[in-house]
Length: 637
Image (tube, rainbow, N blue to C red):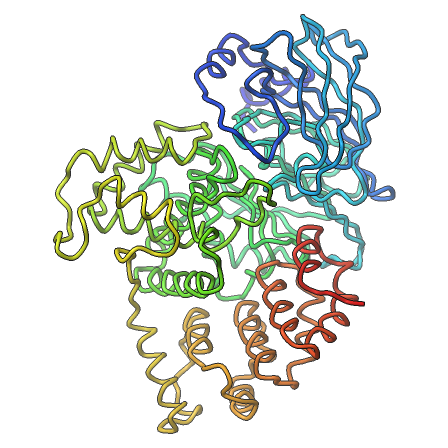
């Protein structure tokens, strides 16, 4: 840590908060038009939280985080209370202060619990209050925290805890305004067992892995609350470059460092296209396999699933995706969860650009092709309302919007703009977009107006003849964003490698080629996935056995290939893979894999019975987010 930063950090900790310019914060609040957020009880138009100072004790015995959250607030309505979001928090007391030194008790109320939103907390504010301190404890069942026993970790010796705050789970371990348009800075003091290391999405993480049970952190750039993150466990660090590195359990460190070796190159490549990386360091934390997502873009410290550790760097598109969020999502954020596609569609498009820059265009086209195929599979099952980028999530869990529509349809929209206006002009537009909206949360409407003004309405020449695709206009943009399905102008990723794979698969299926004659030695994970996905439904257990004997797919060792194979095994009733299916579902809690496998099992009475048997064993090891997803699928007596 540089001396100047250390001095600033020490000063902030001395006074218990990172100070911000009250007048400047007030001006920013006045300029920001607050969107209606159906997933938050907060009243930022009256009282807005601008900084959160956390003082926590992490108890593995109680499975709780206990301590205080001191909130710095800006008030435009002196008569309004402070409205916060909570979920199953045990609130002991609330206090207010005018000077940050003397705190006095105030009254508060906790509203009725909603199954999606949790409970509103209403805090009464004296006329001069500028800070609110809340003493509380999280629930052992907090939806945003997972507590792992030593047996559930790689090392089998120490417990582990990690958070997952997106979309609205921060309120389960911090009382705050849990809306992505309420950006906050934060600081934290975290006390843990002395043999464990704490890390957070902030400055202050130890690169020496030194442990004393008392850790301090500071995030000085305003972020949405869902990006506040913590993990505590037996962690070690290894550098990957001058500003990149990886944390994980000791037994996973060397494998993870090998797999993630290109991270620094990715940062450099992304900066060349989209402008300066604004967050200082970019480190990764490889978590235990119960982590419910592929990755989470917590600033300065991406959380990642160990299922990307394949030994050949074939699954590092996930790293490209989470890094891309440093621009699209963390720097410029969706204002509400209805605008989620602004985060994920942009990020998926940038992910493919990073993959092209590091691994070449053929790899990008394979990844894009698979992404579009996955999207089309989802669209075939969705109602029209869920095929829209600007999805209506009122009265629904915001996690319902985390589909390939936001990711892949959004990415195709941005690729369409690139192909329409040319890469150079579109890259210039995107760089300016990130610069003009840096550290802001915006709505879809704001984005559309910016797009029209700075690209569409400028009447630039396009690369398409109007007879093929219509000239971009507000009407064509609205078709992409506000209407279901894919427009006719949706790009078509093309892969020569996939064409060769498909040809060999066809020859095998029609009997003109044997499996032993298919040249698979140089195949990437993406080619294997394409090969397996070309196998038709209902082609039988005999063919499944042939494939397994030839390629040992039941013991593939690559999570993506195993998942695709096990999905096929359920459909074809290939019982030779049953043992591996059960082990896979018990070992891995990544929702991308777990949910579809249980959905496939649940399609028949026999499968549902099998699903119940497996879920009884696997559920205790799943994160609450994964549990919630599978609970809706597996119905047992």
